[in-house]
Structure formats: C-alpha cells, structure tokens
Image 1 (cartoon, protein in one colour):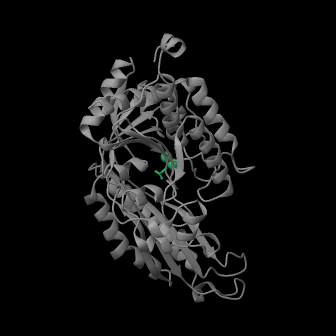
Image 2 (cartoon, protein in one colour):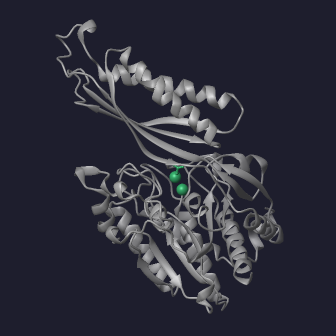
Image 3 (cartoon, rainbow, N blue to C red):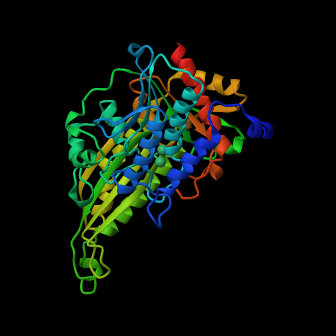
Length: 422
Ligand code: GLV
Ligand code: MN
Ligand code: MN
C-alpha cells in the first residue's frame, strides 16, 4: 500500500469507526491478562453486549441462534436468494490479542454500516456472525458455533465437560443458545461466507503485500492422552520403585515432537503438532505424579500426513509410557477435522476486488484454523488475510495497522456486492 493510499484512500469502510470498535473491544479483557476474553466467560458476554449494541445501531436484527452464535441480520429485497454471511469470532486464547477473530467480526459490522451509509440494500439476506468459541475452549472443542450451524456438532460433544464439570450443553445455554434445538444438518440458506482475518504469520509482511487470499486451511486433530501412574511419597519412594506418570508424559511429549519434525521434513505438505495443555495430578511437590492429561493439537495439509501421525499415536506412543513403568490409560480423539479448501471462483473474485482497489495480493495456505473451514463444507467460502506485525499472534503483542484492517474490509465489501449481483 502506497503512503498516498494510506492517507487518501476512498474505501467504503470507515477506518476510524472500525478501529474505534476494535480498540473498545480490546479494553474488554480479563484484568491482568491482556487481551483475554475466553469463550463462555463473563468477559466474553461483555464483549457480546458491546457487539449487540453496535449491531442494533447498524439496523441489524440481532439474536443468538440455537448454537450460541451472535447474529446480526438484514433481510434482502429478494430473501429467496438466500443468505450471504460475513463472520469470525470474538473469543480469544488466554493472553491472546486484539485482532485474531474480532477483526473479522468488526469488519462484517463495518460492511453492514457502509452498505447503510451508501443506501445499498442487498438482494440476498446479509448476516454478520460472531461464531461461538472458535478457539479451543475449556470444553475440549473449538469452532463450536460453526460446527453447530453446519451440522457438525455431534450430540455426544454436548456432553463434553468443562470447568466445574459443567457440560457443553449447559455452557451453550448460558450463552443464550438452545442446545436441544441444534440440528444434525446444516443451514440450507447460506449461499456464501466471507471472513477477514489477520494472517497470524509473516508471509504477507515479508513480501510487502496487502492481502492474502486463502486456498487451503489445515485439518486439525486434537487428542487427549491420559497417563496413569501411582501417587506415592516423593521422599520415601526410591527411584526404581515409583510409577511417575509425568516421566511417561515427558517421553510422550518428546516423541510427539520428534515425529512431527520427521513428518514435516518429508516436504509433502505442512504438518505441525503441539502439546499445549498438561494437567498433572495431584500437582504437589512432594507427591509422585499419579495422573497426567495431555492435549495434543496436530495440523496437516493432507490427510495422508495426519494418518501417519495418528498411526504413531496408536502404535508407538503408548510404548513410550510403558518404558517408564506407567501406562496410557485413555486416548480420546476430541475432534478430527479434515483440511478444507476455499472456493476457487470466490477467491478469484476476492483477488479481482483487491486489484481493483489497487491492493497487492497473493494466494496462501492457512496453518491456523478458522470458522471458514466449517463453512467451506457447505457454501462457497473465501478468506481475506491482512498482515500483522512481525507475524505475531495468540499473544498480547498481536498488531495490525488501522489501514491494513480497513483495506481488508474494503475488499470484503466489494466482494460481497459482487456476490449479491451474481
Ligand atoms: C485458532 O486460532 C487456531 O488455529 O487454533
Ligand atoms: Mn486464534
Ligand atoms: Mn481466529
């Protein structure tokens, strides 16, 4: 983007209004852990109150659907054509940022306002959606709202337990959803989905480009592994007589890291695996650890790579614990989503609209998961990435410039108008 463009652009999106909303939502954070608004928390509901007010001011009919998604809707002049959706998520990871997810929701809101300002009424219905719990939640599941809306939230998932043994079913109810009304089939009226998101990597910034047009979104498989040992006195139990569950877990964590490196090195596609959650019981300095739960987040560009990793988890991983005198008592696949592809035609349109606005762009894959991955299975879907500083994300330093977000929003606006005219 040239300096001239930064100063004097004539985009439909109102950069200052968009930015003010982003910064105001950033203020709604758990005190002492900026910028945290975990799904299902009181702070999350405060964020939703803020969004509800802005949606209503924009003239949107605003409600929470049965899945717990916050939706702002504007009926089209020809509602039979179906619904075009713009969305993302307003929840964050712990200590996360002010842009991941929420930039896409605010971009959708700004598109709705810009349409109103320009006196444009779409033929399609327009829905701006804040999808519930895109980030991995305390209930062992991510993308809960989008799974629900697209018929991919299985009934047994509603029984997953979170803090204080609350079921996901009850947590969705707390968010204003109606879990008993969640269907096992997708909404049929959705004719297209657009999502703006910060890139969360360094590719665009390094290349000096304004816009990324996403091709593939990696598949994500999350696995919970329970390692069982024996709680014993840490002072009186000799080293060769103890069953230390954490010793077994350490070997598993290292084995997973090495296997992931091996798969990634093959050069057959993107692959990563992370042990990001470790729970130790009883978690006391003078007791030998008796139970360890690990949650593994593994991501692959192709199913073949994921299958190789899952074979390792089944066939080799348990032996790493046995070698330490403890055992893997349970391996639970929490979720297993295939990689997904954005729609080629719609992505071409995004690219054309970027060109038309004088913005530079490139195609790219996404190593992060997105709500778009679930929509891509039921409707033409495209994602608009904008650069973020030093590629940092899922951390408080996450940052994009106002004009970068506004540029991406302008691309979404122009693409939406063209989709409506098709
Ligand atoms: C979402 O941020 C994810 O990729 O985990
Ligand atoms: Mn995220
Ligand atoms: Mn996100």
